[in-house]
Amino acid sequence: MPRYELAKQNNSVVCVGEKNCKKYFQLTQLFINNNSDMKIQVATDTIVETYNPTDLYKVGMKASKYPGKDDSEKIIIDVICKSEANDALCIQKETVIYEKFRSFVEMSLQ
Image 1 (tube, rainbow, N blue to C red):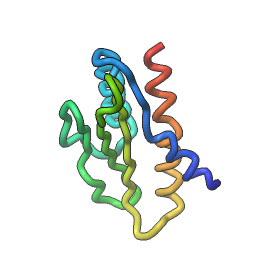
Image 2 (cartoon, helix red, strand yellow):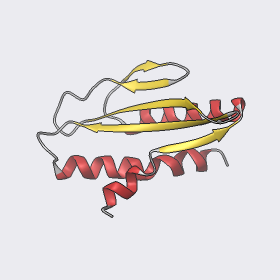
Image 3 (cartoon, rainbow, N blue to C red):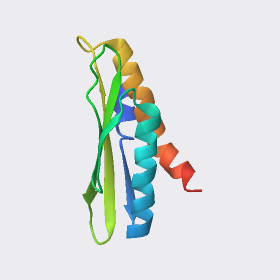
Image 4 (cartoon, rainbow, N blue to C red):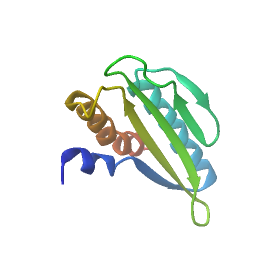
């Protein structure tokens, strides 16, 4: 499986409990703020979204929080890189961000 596809599998985290999930989502917002080239335009209890990238090779991001079974929730991020086609530089940027997401959240909670 290509590195990008493997990395994209790290685009989510699952949390349990309201207090814990609130921390996960706060960390997700910090991750987006630190790893996106674009400013955050929306930040609610369920969505954090940057502006869409307008310049080539700039990265925007979105995170969504979905209710799960019992008191669990799943947070999923999407990375959007502005390119003319499936450009290798954008794929590389997206891959690196996806690879860092889950470990950033989990390591921050320790």
